[in-house]
Image (tube, rainbow, N blue to C red; front, side, top):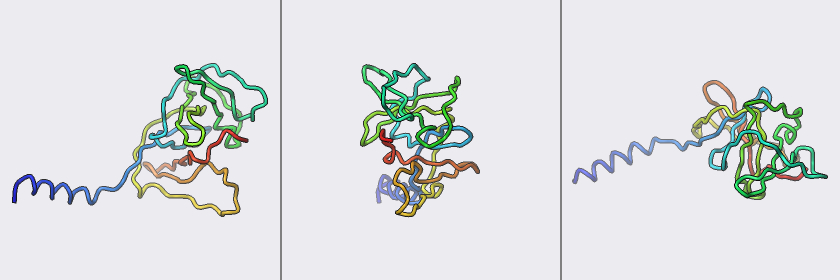
Length: 160
């Protein structure tokens, strides 16, 4: 048997034990931590002036112009039924690529870190089918003893 074949077999054996991992950006809203799948993030920018649009739901703060693209901006606090945003030096707008909506900005209190979670560290949440389909959290991640609520980005819409 050739050396390269032996090395390939050894590598295949090592990879069998490897579990799938996912990376999340951990953000803070109030006192809670939430995770956003890093694959959906376009960019993260400091808070900037937002142009208000009349007759929009309260959680839709308006739009920003980023590199010539007009991007709607959502207050994640208001979307989730929390209190009004408190803007600080740590406040950021995370621009996400959403399947149904295109690029959308989320106002968050703080961007904390990037974490890597294995499949074993993520627990899917199950809901009664009679409950509203507007629940924005679909799983909880366990990282260093902390729980991180993971957003279901497919459930986020610009509608009230």
